Length: 261
Image (cartoon, rainbow, N blue to C red; front, side, top):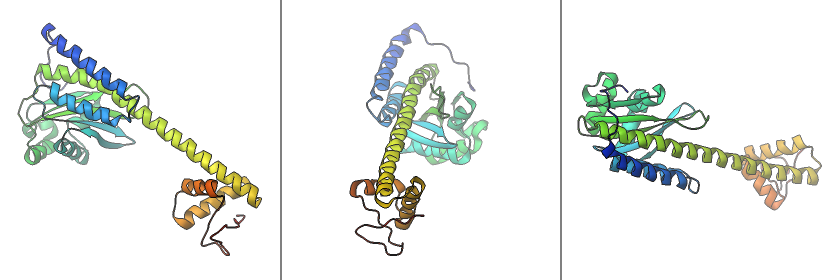
């Protein structure tokens, strides 16, 4: 942590933490049947409900070298995030890159992020920020952070930091599940694409006596000719048995005699 020392949670706060943990577990369970993003929106919403002093919240993911806000409660939170992405510095960005938690009392005078702090304070009225990196449970290479904003200086006390810790801990489950679902969906799409392409190639090979490489090449030519995706061309061939290449000599709108390339 990069600000004042934070004390541990007292026994009186424990019931609130237990209730919060139960709410986060429910959200994690929902990810198995949803695409993940509605649950992330709910996490952001609960953050401003449960963290004392919070007004806006967002979730940042760094993937393939690019920062992106995946969920937010308000447009102001998105804008505060995007200013950090553009500048390349800020509590959210640094929490992601440094594997840490950052707390600031008044960003307009915080020397750690002087450029961003002055701009976000002037443009959006942000004064306090609590940014916590999420410890994801896979090796996807993605990194995430939970960002909580307030227009009140020194808005986040020890209880807020404790609540933020629980939220970010359980939020890591949501983001991990979402990323896993994204990868599974992309894999299924790739497999489906390969299946459609394979079917189309088989049709062309049987009907026009093409080799495997020739069949794939004419699909590529048709894709280039029509400025359409290869998988869409393949699906059309699989459904109709017809391959149309308008710019190939003697092309027929009814059924093209595919050239041996």
